[in-house]
Length: 102
Image 1 (cartoon, rainbow, N blue to C red):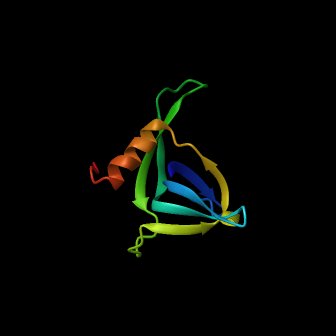
Image 2: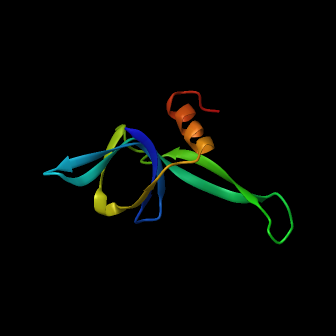
């Protein structure tokens, strides 16, 4: 398993440890372990120049808050993209699921 960010058809961005579920040599689903939704808060502007760089505040919330399940299977047809999270988001996720939430 590796930590990835999945963009779903709904537009949600989910970070979790993920693994493919394969049937007859074809991926049919992904198993999301301890999935959290990435919530993008308003951007913070660092400069007022035309090529202004921005940073974004991110918060993580449990994806399905009314469930006790840590493992959630998601059909491959619901996943638009799987990407590697940036280091700071990956660290934030690891701290949250390992109990060192800040």
